[in-house]
Length: 39
Image (tube, rainbow, N blue to C red; front, side, top):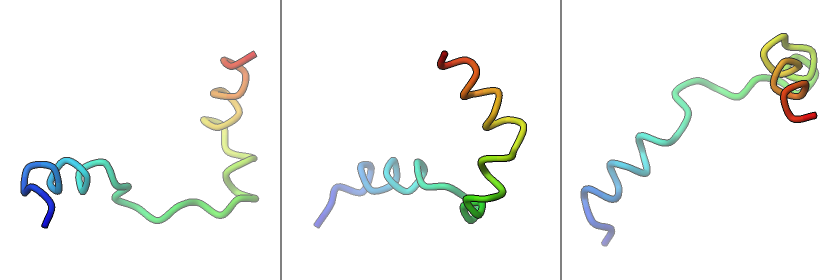
């Protein structure tokens, strides 16, 4: 049985919204800006 505090932290890290479809994600402005910052 996981520790309650640990389980709460784990659940808080999970996304609150569904993931974007891949084709939409790779065209998203915020995604493109993040890629630019990596280079």
